[in-house]
Image (cartoon, rainbow, N blue to C red; front, side, top):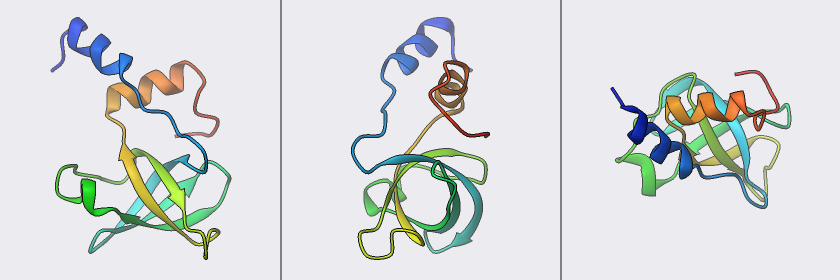
Length: 102
């Protein structure tokens, strides 16, 4: 459980999508580092967890993530770049930075 100071520090360091990145919500885990994601632009994509976070972060259905659509199959596939904690996701929702329903 986080106390008030830890929660404020966590919120102060929230990473936001840049460039081609966007928010997404994980809908289903498929195994082998793949998952289904509902994206901010209204599309459903097959996501792949990049190796940098694969063994460091545990991603489950319902988690808020940052994703980058692929260059070639941009409407179908994406890479998962970042996972938000519950505290960060709640803060983004409260402040209106997430434009779709979680």
